[in-house]
Length: 324
Image (cartoon, rainbow, N blue to C red; front, side):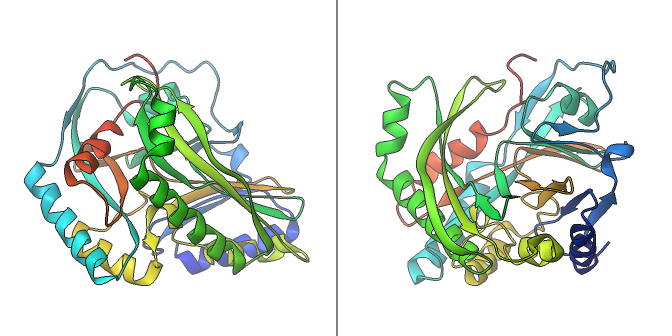
């Protein structure tokens, strides 16, 4: 299904207050739309506690999860393309992503069932996503976004203070919050930042990590659900996984990454007839030609250190549970 078809069906179903599940890729070229999603199990999902996952299903566990990351030299090539764009002023913040090859006996289904995440999605034989990052929520005429920028291993001494006081991370977070404010201003009124740079704690197979988030909100007028597709697609691609300014930043991403992201860093969401909730498709494992790849990335600014950014994208390669 094309992105435009999905948008129109979101408008139609939203206006009728009919529940649906949708997903769209980063490039806005394809996606899926599922009416009455709780009545099907072709695509499994959980969004904010709402799920169509069958209970008590026995799924085989895995034991092997080995990473085979891109080389430092390959990452350096991508990083240098980004840095040149930053030096020219074509971008102030850019999210650079890579694919890490995996050697594993886990299945996508097995990972999905054991994952502990507020947003889960399984498209069989294609990918599994266990995202901690909200895209937008719409409830009672308010649209809210929760950009997530800044990650640190919780075992670092005084980790919370370190991440909050880090100059590069602080500048990156200010930039992304400003971008999200500008995005919401296109569809909402009285845009504000109710919470700024708060800490989320996430348990992973590599240990606990801390991530820094903010909340940006605005007021929607009229019957917002009858134009739900227009609102959501007017904000894509998500600012937190693209950058600022968007058009020129997307051009740099294409030159640096040299392959489409597909569903990785796209968005998916659920409408229950009264409210809408959605997530950015990060923490993402895809299956291609019988092989598995973990997609991860990080925000790059003019102050970024290449080695630190390389380590960060590898630290994000994990299983979303505390034991294998």
